[in-house]
Amino acid sequence: MSPETSQKLSLFQRTEILMRILDKQELETIFNSLTALQMKDLRNFLEDELLYMAAINKEPIMGKSIIRSKYMPVSDYYRQQNCGERLESCMDESCHPTNAVCFSMKMASHIHRLLDLLKPYLEKSTAR
Image 1: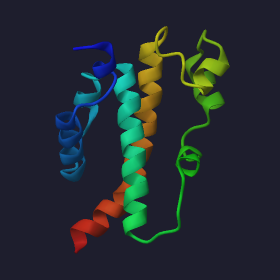
Image 2: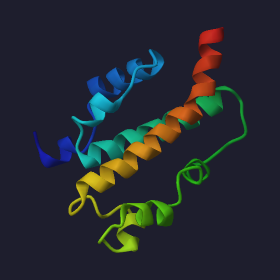
Image 3: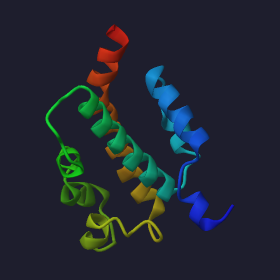
Image 4: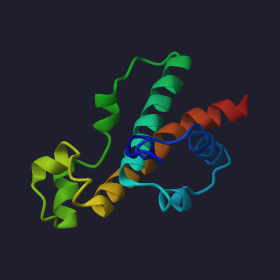
């Protein structure tokens, strides 16, 4: 597998993750098998899904900046981790080559927040 390919989730992985979310299963076992960049790809994918769900429910347009404002502030996360990297590398998400574990944990916290934000949309769709 080329380095470029390993940075992105496959269609199969995305489908498996969506099925787990719909079945209200934990994603932790999947997290353990993903690289730091695949965790970022998953976060970005779920952000796109949230934007899509809001649009089909005819809700006010929201952008990724609004979604990302709902995450723990980077400076708070950085302090909690007692990280030796520069704060800027945490803010611009460039620390993954040198601190992949911390980067993946940050992505996991974003993904968990996204799941909370997606939950009302999923409950609406199953109530129909």
